[in-house]
Amino acid sequence: MNSSCHFAIVLLFLAASCASAASLKQAEFTRVINDVRTLTAQQQPVPAKLGDKISGQTAVSTGMSSRAELRFPDKTLTRIGSNSVFKLGQADRTVNLEQGVILL
Image (cartoon, rainbow, N blue to C red; front, top):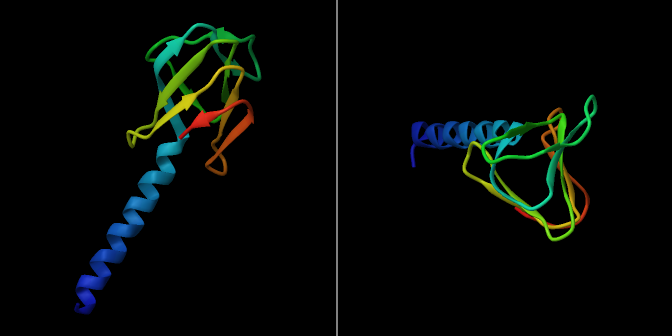
């Protein structure tokens, strides 16, 4: 491979890395089964609905026999099991599972 081809590959890799990092900033509910709530620091828990979006300041809580599915902009799916608390860390692009189970 020549140097221009290597440079193009590096640019594609960097673009993909930036896109995937940005993709963790918000997610949309694609499934809500039974007791699923969004939690923000300023408000009481609110029942989640299909199409609702969460961002770094919002957590998701599921009750007994409940579950949810979130889709990120890059089409990544996260499934949250019952009795779980899930939060995005927008500042450092982390996913925080305080309790329960997820499939990412």
